[in-house]
Image (cartoon, rainbow, N blue to C red; front, side, top):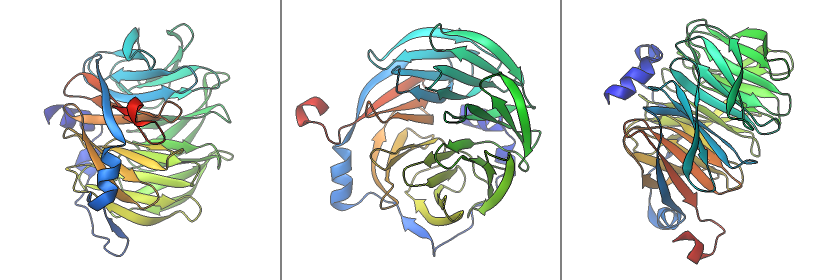
Length: 345
């Protein structure tokens, strides 16, 4: 777990974490049980394991090009994976200590946050080359895009801000103050809202139209880390490594509507598949947890590699990608829902 501690130092966020509080009234039991678990296990399987750069961390997919992009936290590179062949087809040198990765499928552009260089590298998906380097705040960590508006959002851990980048000009268009130790960030293109986890028990909600914080959602643990959105259901999921829980937030009311406790050791990266209303969680301890977004319960676990930290989905390909920080690999999971049994063996 040494690598995990190093990465989360990435933020003194861990130092900022306090013991999780209980919220029994909202809690949903997440332990796999009964027919639901057995059914889900048959619907998710390991398809491939791909060697990548040292200490893979952030990951993002581009469903249009069937490419997957992986930040090598310990290698100063971004690996480019072909989703068609499950092989690394390129490596791109980026800023120091690359962490978060995000894609804009409309422009075929990739953005990588470099913690050690206080920059965001802008990469052309057509040429696999850096086309711009943007200076942001101190210790950029999380990054997200809104393809509808062409804006990119970057958390600056030691500046208490989110940098708002114009994808058209590759310049910082605004800075939004959100609170101490902002880490995770996710955008909902349908509502033009951006969600930011911080070192407190609040998730900040930013309006993409005004670049201001319009709400702060209280979560039932000392601090949250990763965050993901499901635009189809207007639902947000926030993780807590030390709280061992996932908070489920309604985007309509900006309130926590459920807490998922699944028996996982910790809760790191998280990603949603809007097509199946399924959520995938990397636990840092060798497993990916499969959560039903309809029931807000854990329905299955899948063993992956060593120290899984990041996760991303490609709903069109029915694929899930998990970065194994301790094994220098990416595990490819396939969702068999809706496929013929012969295609899912």
